[in-house]
Length: 131
Image (cartoon, rainbow, N blue to C red):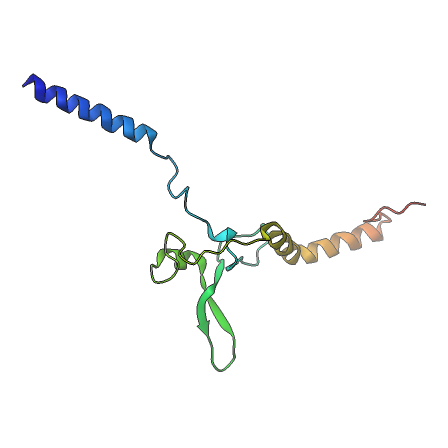
């Protein structure tokens, strides 16, 4: 009877030890869509937004209008016949920072223009000029 209790206690301590050493963040080793060349961020103000982002690898082309409607990136990652959880078709974006910067400018171009008009109208220069 004591040997069975000792074995159970030993197994329990081993299980707890393994649980403590397991990763705490799920999916930490899986590549993210945001870093993929096929990722198309939604046109929101936030930097490289993932909400409503699309994947330029999957979609449907309208044969009349010639317009392609791309699938949502989060849906592509949940379907095994597309990218799936592991990101089967992931290709790293070589110019990620540039892509994010261009997206930021596109989303904020009206604000940037508005601020430059305001600064100019009150006599402040956006670009300092040596006088």
